[in-house]
Image (cartoon, rainbow, N blue to C red; front, side):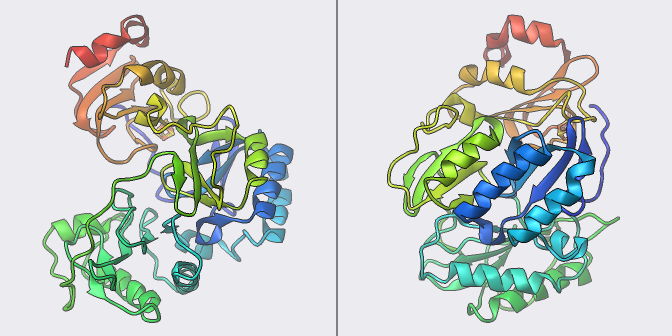
Length: 383
Ligand code: SF4
């Protein structure tokens, strides 16, 4: 296993992260939605101040890559004009919220998201990865998304607050929900959920920490994460590795407002047909949807090998129903959880991990990249 640097914080707009291709500036859209004007302006800013390359993160954020250090302040001004800049790093860091993209006008989700966002400004200091999800459709759709405190619906449609990893939630009204979510975050801290600045709710629950009274209502059965296509609310479109050029964002914005999803896809709000843009993934059977790969070398300074060319080549060979994760180091940024096949870069090549995450013990260690490229099919057949 390769070593990697744990930064202990997530990049934002005010506190960007330096990468191999310049600054990575992460924009957190309010309620997970970009108006057409915001999307267009972000695309322009990505070209003026950065490389024009944009990533979608697994936390439903938009990342502008290749931003020049001497352009950062001008980019912040542009984001402020768009209403996309928090007043300070602390507020930005606390606003770690994922919202279901399938909300409907008038169903209360927008207002709930705004209220929770406002409450998070007063959130206690939580671990960097600690997050909140508003998953208030008829049944949870974000169940597989990494987060810590969830607002969902029970079978009978009651709004419930559920700690990630717990079987049951507690009924709350929409008015009570923001304060109740913060109270649950405080419970996590008060009951020892954090060790050395790190900690996640599911692990805390798994240790058997008893919840406060009232967490007795089951959520509705979770739905399978969606693929590209037409959905209630709009057209969902994907991108290879969640990355696209600013020009694509400009074109998409002409079709409607955009909702950013944690599946590295965008929902074009109100669209009833799929936009015809070459670089989009619109077929749910596209093999690139069965692969994830982080930036890798040379874009990430911690990367020990290039990742995406290999992931592109292997995508059509990944067995149906399986998932491949190609990681530039053991940190596993692109997929913190397990995959059927994980290739983790090392100085010598790649380690293969079956049904595990990037930092797990490999099944096969030190496979040379050339050998994988020459006989890619054996990677999946021999196992
Ligand atoms: S997992 Fe990938 S993106 Fe994350 S630090 Fe390692 S090489 Fe960089």
